[in-house]
Image (cartoon, rainbow, N blue to C red; front, side):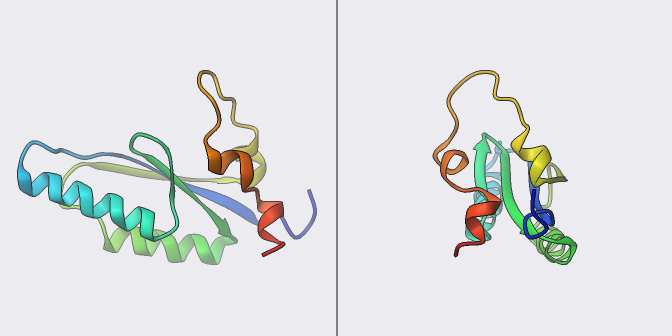
Length: 110
């Protein structure tokens, strides 16, 4: 891995939000829309991830997550290096479109 791509990381967000009332469904929808508008891709149901360029971007996006949290539920996040993310083993099912086409190395071209 080159020096340019070694600082790239992935921020993964895992959440389990209640949807038992209309108000709770609205909070779930607003949080999900925030993630999508903030550049996250859905990896699985309730698992979203985005690429980051260094620890400054990590701090920025963690802060943004904290300001957009719904009032109830369970939300966790984890940061992994791009190399760790690329080493993820897919056990069942095909890779999603974003996983096939976008890598940290390709982001350098944009």
